[in-house]
Length: 140
Image (cartoon, rainbow, N blue to C red; front, side, top):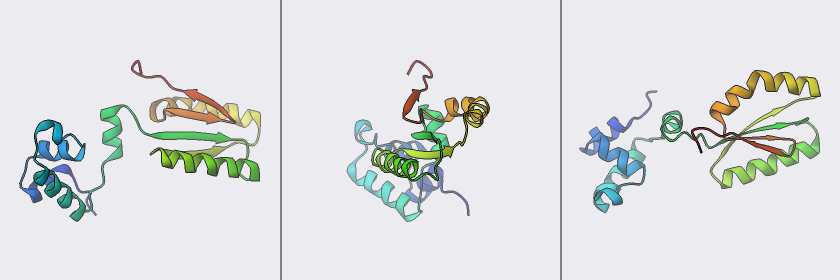
């Protein structure tokens, strides 16, 4: 199934792709787009089952709204409950959570050496057994 694009919405609504972009990014009011047109664009987007392309959005904004969570042993009831609590909180703040677990210090070190660069590129926070590492990019 083809992913619905802003161009598809624009064509169906009879407006420009730029206008659709402004409306879908909640900038219609600040650009003088009427409430009626904004409602029409959003209705067409809903009818077409549009979902934003999170990869494109993250490239534009420099944010992924994703947190990587590394715990000692996700099978341990304490860590499982901790992970669930963190996930529930992250969801309320609009973040996605990716889990990983390790069973030994050496496994953790290997994991971090291999994956740390990917985390720095794609995640804004890394939670490691209660310690938070914040990645800094582009002066943010």
